[in-house]
Length: 203
Image (cartoon, rainbow, N blue to C red; front, side):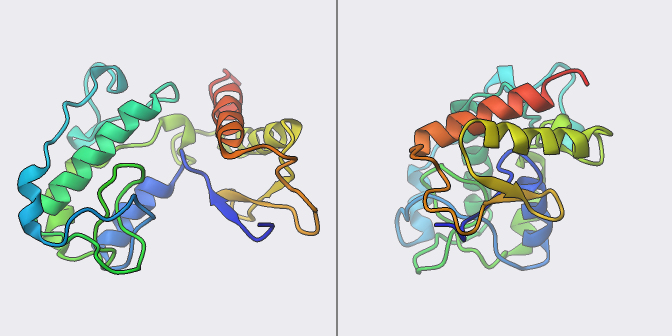
């Protein structure tokens, strides 16, 4: 457990995913497999995008813009829309043992090969943009807020430290229980609370 590395879920992972997919490499982990052929796409329905997660004026290139206060349910709807688009444009369902591609928690597991590239190009405008506060290129205070975020997690009981490039955190080595007994739900709450507190603050 002490070797587990957590990429900053609300940070650069989704942006990195598009670049990885377009170069033909794999994507991130996804939900369980559903179906074995493209014929299953007929049973998929694209959910309506929640307006509360897209600010007035829309996002760049029409991409949905997530906010720090976007709910898990809203974010999942955006990822599901993106995954369904990829599948409708030829990305096969993942029927092997490899992790799926393109988002998490949607229940649709896609082939992680990054093929066909044309599908990722066609669906690029559906790939959710992460909150600008979590984009180091757009947030001049990212580095200091990131350090505060990791310290906040430690203050909530998690024995963690930042990765060298501030793209994620990992549990401290040599600690008997780096979670301090916190279950997955409690860890998720700590992550969300610390993200709101440190990146949502006007610093």
